[in-house]
Image (cartoon, rainbow, N blue to C red):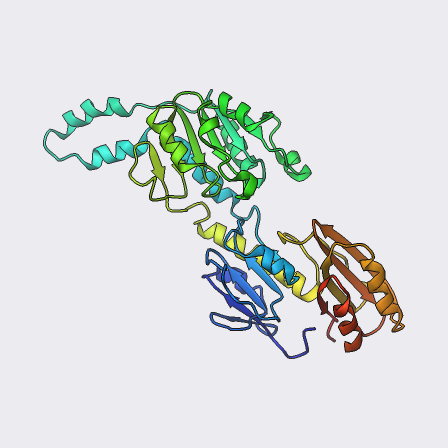
Length: 395
């Protein structure tokens, strides 16, 4: 329960755009850069693995999409949601992908190095003699394969179509919302291998999880068109760097454009490595900060969940000033146990919502009267209940 007059402490592990922090009102939230027991943690790239968390931690929010730097499984066991900002940086990444395609198509990276190495003597003659080496191709008429058709992948597909390209897409887990936003001209591939075989350019847009690690590997790279271009603005580890270098050496790949430089890749022919610039625009940073701040407030003040990677989406309009938010394991008889605990104390349930996601479940309960501490303790003692928060609307 957030008691009247007590501010929630919000620990910032990385710089977060002020436009987002300003959405956390100072009378209720205190933003700090150091704390041993914060109520909330806001993060961008800081590696949280190995951090120790106090019992009062209520939420973690990453101002970005990927959460590889956050110990999601550990926080789930504590009943702590991990929020992210899917789509908030989508336009920034889309623009960088288009830039990457143009860099590769027109051989701009080696061309820039060529010019940088020239001296002024007979400059015009050297330019004219050398430029033929860097002749490229135009994008219209070529095929772009997009692996992963979420918000970013859909925007990339749309941009490519507008540039006159043919687009082939693959995503076995595409959501209904993403399917609706996908341009109708995108043709469906039935597998990663089918897409790689048919594409001149391939752009990766999937999260790094166990089944996507080395999704692009030596076996399927060998099936690509000779001289194809691979772009990775997804996550380090989705493509096998060693296999990519072999494909470049064999001329199977002409260019690998990645936002994730590694010791293996730096300085190697055919590699264009950028310093993780995908979301590095002021607009994207603002969008991410605003999105996670709004999601945090809605959760902390009303218990509503949206875009928590380890919890189900759950929103219920308030119908009472007295609300309980309960994180629990997704096991049988949980709702009955919660209802019995309140019924035995003569607390009437006005409205209830229960949602689940894998092994995690979440329950919102509006009741008609104040909830005594004894009831909250009883709820916490139910086997499978991970966290209970009492969220009365303060007068």
